[in-house]
Image 1 (tube, rainbow, N blue to C red):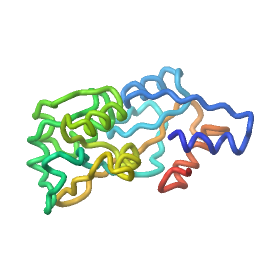
Image 2: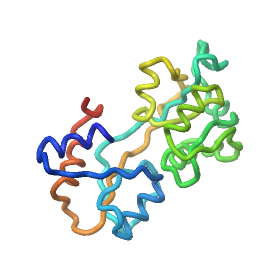
Image 3: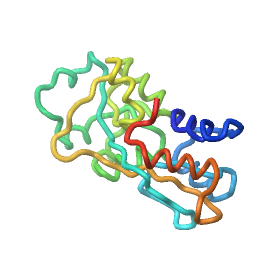
Image 4: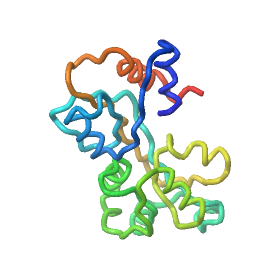
Length: 192
């Protein structure tokens, strides 16, 4: 998202876009009540009283610290083992958590090892050895590239979820909000 925010500024140097990091439930409420003009959410539970557009999909991936017992696995992790393992998770209301629990319902019954309020906090906890986590590929890409985190392959299909733009007011976006959605739609990887 921070990389996406640079594009509207390139198009209009006086353009100002402020970013508030909230969970999906908070974003949907903020858009509904007019506090936020535009939001991006990962939850599959969308409100019917806001406009939505899904410009892309995201993948949820299992990540561990390099020292974790799953790191040297030769075969993929089965979903039932993942579902029964205490994970480092986002807080209730997080789109990441809601999407994961919808894709792997049995995971909702396993108490987490830690519950944290941001992707950054979850990444740090995982890298510190607190336990595995399931996070957005967009959120962990740099940690995987640096070797701070390792991806554990899953058996079966990938865990995909929508990345959805939400807004209230006119159906057709304009200005920086429209530019931001266009950037999200056009990129498979945020521009550098």
